[in-house]
Length: 449
Image (cartoon, rainbow, N blue to C red):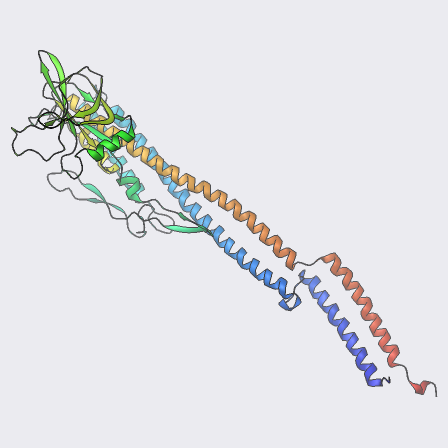
């Protein structure tokens, strides 16, 4: 086989160019510390690198969402702490107002302080975040959720209305989880069950439109068996009526105080001569005893016994004709409770309100205030649980980000020691190719002629 001079030149040039190209590639890899300079260097690794990069970017966005959710929930938690402190301060003053040695002026001074606390709670309810969105308005982020409305006769004080909704704003904090980053004001401030959460007790008066005349005071009561209570409520004719509940009416025969339970859940009778339906026998009363809410329809109706699994305690000495009502709990806002306390403390004793009646009403409002505090505690526990969950998600996101970065490093980064060794070897190869090219191109028959 004959090799022409042109073939030798072309082969030598190609060898030099190939070695120079490999040397340049190594030089670029070393200067950038990257093994892959383009997808052509390793198509499979480039595809894997793109997938990991995209997954890492999505994870970073979830981490950012987690931070935003944590900031907002932390702000809500701070507001809830302030709300708890305000309501506890109100409770302390209410307990103080129950001291019988206080004068009307003292109670009115406490009412003035409670009015200031009322404004403070209203301000918390209309709190906003740094972006100007209301914290407790549901989906209505640009709407102040709570507003005073003018007093409508016969009421003499204004009320607070809620114009938000029950919606929860959700933020995607992981690939499979959304988290609520707000608290609906209706849940926190409005839908609070009064009484003990199952039923509410109150003094009903002596039947002539006057307050109870005795010194009897009823407590908030308690449910001993929640299952019995729910079954009794479902079975008893309390649903869909406007005058719900049981009434404990007192009488006195030969100086012996007795009580009897009546069903006042039916519509009011058309005539006062028609008494409410008795649902228990006449029973002797002992101050401080537990009165079980156990009813039995009396003749002529067929006897039907209903055990509510609940009881109330009445202390003091109720007068004949005094009565107390037990009604299923209804929703009562914290603003209604606070306004009721303010109105009660502003009313002088003796102007239609006896000391016993005042104490009874004060205890009722205090129970509702305790329900409001318990509700705030429940909501704050929920917010705290979300914050703890976000901490765990944030830790997981950080670990995943490190793993993604390590995977990308394994695919993209250069082994610098190996690269420097290859670079040195390639330099030697290039120099050898250049020297051999010079020697080969110098061969000619004319040198030997």
